[in-house]
Length: 224
Ligand SMILES: N[C@@H](CCC(=O)N[C@@H](CS)C(=O)NCC(=O)O)C(=O)O
Image (cartoon, rainbow, N blue to C red; front, side, top):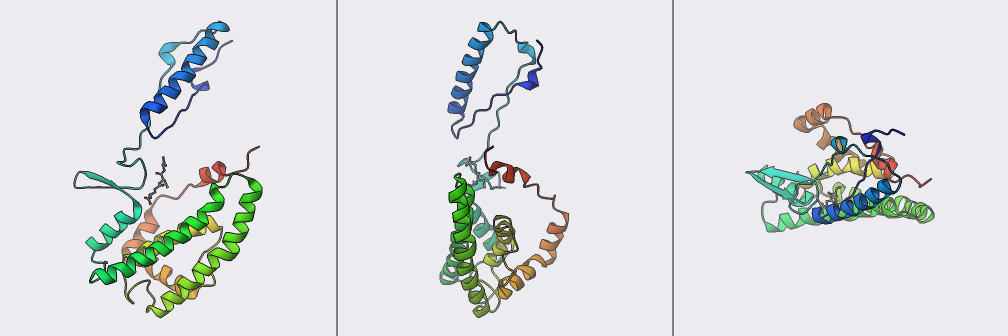
């Protein structure tokens, strides 16, 4: 019998690289025993190992690399970049109102993610029903009214980094919900369209690589 090196792969992952290594070694020890028992010869020169590391201070993405330093946590990054771009509040109070709405959006994002984290198919469907049909509309309706009362923006009645954040996170909401999140919420839709039409943002949307999120669908597909 002949088999090729790339026919066989062992994958081990852990947030501590040493633990991933130990797990891999233990699998290799078992494999080696099995190969000896069944007298299978391995061409060691054609075997290799690859270590993939997220070079992140806290092991998570996204990352901002700036001034030779690497920073994680998406909201902290957006807050920093927003302030650098002059899109923060004029004082601590206005910053608080921006942070408040960002946390509301995060609450909604975490709700929408819940069904995708549930592996039991029945519970997943039940969660989708409640969250997509009941929980999300409550958030979206409140946000819509809030924007209407705030001069078309999310905080302090004026343009801030919270609006830019919303313009981007809408795409994540659409993906999780499976439909356009702002449909039926005219103030949210107008805000999203306004942000996505800003020349620099529109230019990026037009030239960015196409998303290939098919791997996520596969990841969450029911087990056969
Ligand atoms: N609180 C963090 C969470 C980031 C997070 O969970 N990122 C995921 C990708 S969306 C990740 O890096 N997962 C890798 C892992 O958990 O090992 C943030 O908002 O930036």
